[in-house]
Image 1 (cartoon, rainbow, N blue to C red):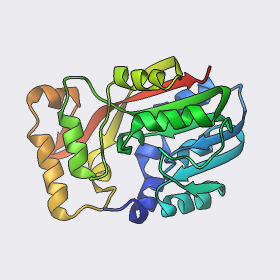
Image 2 (cartoon, one colour):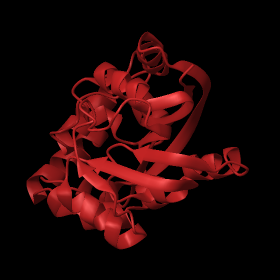
Image 3 (cartoon, one colour):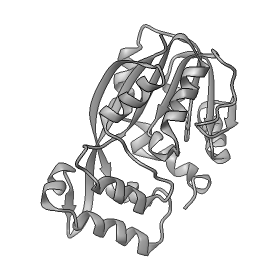
Image 4 (spheres, rainbow, N blue to C red):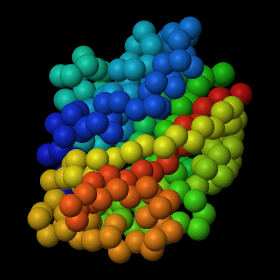
Length: 238
């Protein structure tokens, strides 16, 4: 599995192309235009494309993702970079965003410290990521089965605590439900037939309570879709 070899899948992914999170942000910032914005772990560039800004810069660990973001949206200012080591000067950006990526990061607190460092005073940081309940160990387990780069989806409370520990002020937190087409989601990183079957079995093997919690849908004896929660957080550098 490789993000470099899956860049086109991420560009065309319904999970990334659309979403109530992008609709929420379009309404929330309808009257705003930022000067310099940074999209961390940008994937194919959908988030950066949606943010109104004069200068848009993107980073990702995958060079092919950066190429795809440039080809699709003209996001030509890109850097190959880990989220925990952003190659920018202090107080450089009015807006920093990170969408559906932090669950891959080895050190989310270090990432948030970097966000604080590179943001201008009163700058806005928008974080969107999968969130789990404190008693839920199943979804992280299934995500890791599908994607070996998955580290951890956090609770809402933990995400806010990590940000506040790095001196970012929480301004808004919204929970959104996202329905995933199972076949598209499971095939995004080009798994083997055997791995795909393992991922599907993991959903079938869930306790009934969690099948209901994830709104697992079946059709003709196959998994059709499931729904998880995304947290949309707006922080500010005081």
